[in-house]
Picture 1 (cartoon, rainbow, N blue to C red):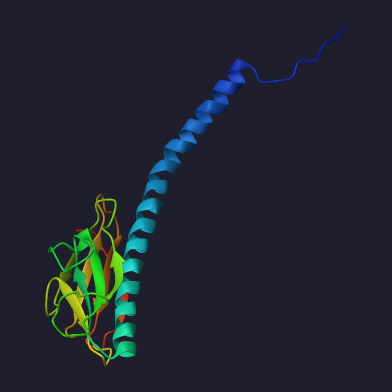
Picture 2: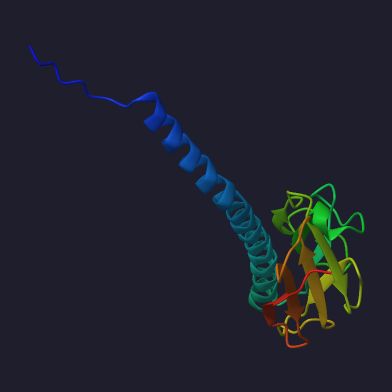
Length: 171
């Protein structure tokens, strides 16, 4: 009686595990970079879509629309854009959120991302006029912890209200 044995020997299994561990060691750092790049792209796209929405709503409604820092997601509070922001139509031109004016709420950025602004009329808000023009030009810099290469996103808002993005190197 000749029995044929099928299966893996212990040595074969150890060789396969060694090869798998080597491949995982090479792949994990690359995968981390991909996750970080996707996270920052998503966060940049959220801000860009909010600014484009604000511009469109200003033109459509014929009133000033403001995007401002909001740590409580109900009023313009705080100074850190990474803590979240709100968009509202300032129908009575008082510069604050009143009943029925809120358009969109965006929560805090996850993953320890930082978002800073420069060049705007106010460091904590961007205002769109009924013409679609921004009250002032400026930029946002979005970065993540452990940034490598050119993972910083720069969001530019020009006086005409148009929004564009570009990449910049980590500092």
